[in-house]
Length: 239
Length: 323
Image 1 (tube, rainbow over the protein chains, first blue to last red):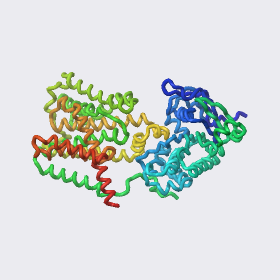
Image 2 (cartoon, one colour; image 1 turned 60 degrees about the vertical axis):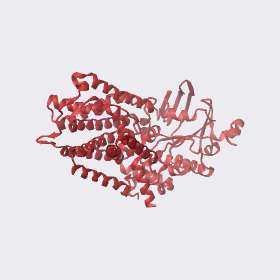
Image 3 (cartoon, chains in turn cyan, brown; image 1 turned 30 degrees about the vertical axis):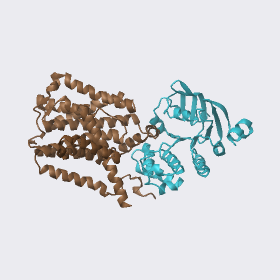
Image 4 (cartoon, each protein chain N blue to C red; image 1 turned 180 degrees about the vertical axis):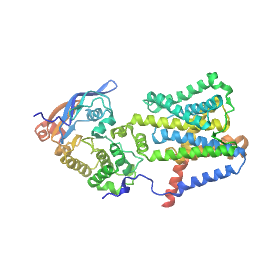
């Protein structure tokens, strides 16, 4: 019996900014319900990789989603298929309230109020603080709350694959741990997650596999629990 | 269970800051309908500009794009109505609708390639659109009568009803404006309107949430063009004469001033801006030679001390009052 195709498969995906190739031909996979972490120093091409997958940055190479070639689809079409990204810096609509941000997250639900309300309730169950702040402008919230809103908004889209670009960036350690723990819960419920992180110890607690990017290409791919046995990687990412 | 209102994004209640402009606007209208022809003309122009700015606000305020070319679509509407009514005896209301459709189609064709540009580049491209239309209206004399302009344009009429007097014409313009504002209110609160505001916030984030950014920007551009066309048609019927100068860069500057002074991105802002910019110079007539200086100083003061426009100022005063 043929095995199911991976949730996401990248084949030689590369991307450039002008003449600078920020992401050299890169291949990786994320299986259904898997949490994969991408590590790497600044400028390694981690964010570019996520942007190239969502076509926010034009790239070349092949992107397969559940076995289907989606390399030529526009950003909003990828979102309709269930590929949702939480951008670095969160990308919230600052002049809108928490409620408005969340409802826009559910844009793909069309005018289906029942579905929207059900998703909204799930988000509020996951992040009760958002319910308390529902009529507050998103720009007036703390960094941690904004990150919760960014993830909540992404969940409103009903993702099959959630990609997050450094969700713990700029957060206090306790809040970052809370956010990462929530991602763990989501993963346990079957959601595929591709997580770009610099705070490796937190991310590695959840990930099954790790890709380490360096100078725009995959330097190492290994199971997350083996990173401690690689002296150089452990020194760089675990301490 | 979730409350059914939890996904409602309607603003809670009416503050006095929202009611005040409506009361003042009503006052201006009552004054216009009980005054002489000159006041009616000033208020009529304000209403026409209010319609133009309501459309422009959709593209610039709600969707966060830049257009310096609304004068092109106002010219299309104006010349379209003038030619159809004068040369082909088309019913004015029918001509107004026909030119709105035509302008919308032109916006669709022009906007498709143009809206791939962003920021300053988009602004320059739309500005060029206005300049090209101006040149056409000057040079294509067989169609537009060039600098001579088009005269003898009939007043608005529908079947047996003809708006003969200035006040009747003002009433018709106000009805069209009210319909335009009503449509803007409905569109703003719709799924499409929310998506447009998301695009204004962050195109990348909007796209990542499944909003078809390019398509919605184009639709927003077409909506603005249709409003501008309607405003141009109303102008032609109200004045009875048009020439290329009417649709020059002054119109662009004027509409921008109205938009920012009233409060861009709000429903009431374009209307308030249109009234203030139209009426203010008239109130300054007593300054005689210093009229323009006084007018500009006042405009600058409003823009400096109320950068979010009159609506923003009223909202913040209302907030302080509540606290």
